[in-house]
Length: 470
Image (cartoon, rainbow, N blue to C red; front, side, top):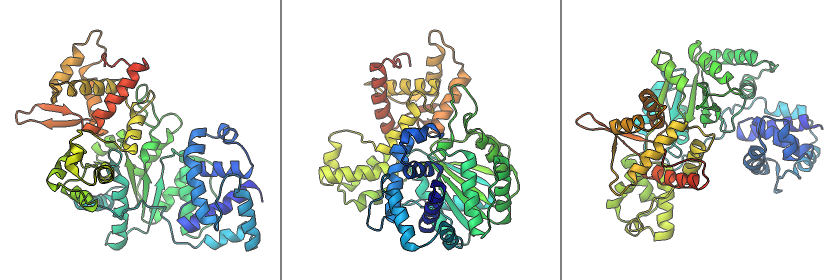
């Protein structure tokens, strides 16, 4: 059995057990294991870097395959080939027969996130049910841990039981930034399997996309792209192309999906706004962008579930962490583990905790080639510096605009500063409040302030960025 046949066999088994096809980076890792190649060697011949393949894709893949192929034996890069060949001998089946065994499976969706501890969101669910019935594309935007994926998973669960009928659901995580041709190819294979059709996969992306639209017109599918910020690879400092050169085809693909007639719906979750979607929405096209905010009083159930004391102080914690479910769960666990569930004892230390996921998401924004523009970083550093002063208070928008206008050798216009503020707000990095006198006040949530202070200090120490000039 050669590498291509082996990957096909494993792919079919994963689909049979998990209801999803292997992603392209997973196939690359399998190829390296089957041919006994180093990750470095295989990465040089692929569009994915070695860190992604070795540290993010491979560990999860071996866990997955241990459950599917292991039969009590742990699957690793070195053991994979032996385990697969042994199972084929025992089963006495050729790859073609394995393919035939899974063709009729009705499972279409991938692995949904765990929603056993889901709180509130009744209005949001009702709104999303209406939107996916009316629009061809809906994107849910929100900060890390706010519950985007959980909300969509809950929606899919409700759709299966309610009156909002779709023929099938497809769940695809795109956090690994797949090329469009690979992603559309995976979708076509999944849909062809559902229809019990033999698929002659076209080579060109144009032909693949046209074939996909034939399916979207013939039946009603709800397709979910989870963690869609992975598709936004453009450098916002130098280009207006949000997808970047290598992923530019996504812009055309999404435009076509929104503008062409079909009866399906694409639902995306993202930490980043899709600017081109917003433009199409303003033109009256069937696309909607929804910003997901934190939980309100429903978040009290998180603290109740973890058995915390001092219920009269819970609302203050919810406000501090802006109702972020993941942050609140982490906080409740820490208070229970280190303070015996006593909220008052925790509050004595006047500290703000941060989840790894929240910090990683900010790292991706603030790093040297991150998703924030230079001007956006300057605004964030300036707001943090002002808010952490002893007399720190809310900052007026007018005051911020004057600050940047009056700077020596100023090279930015007021409209550019306003555009940057709009971008930061869309990414849930700054907060706005309008007073009774119609004055706009700007602030940052405590977790963001803590992160920016730490990040700014590191930058100054490494002489990468001048905090004061920001």
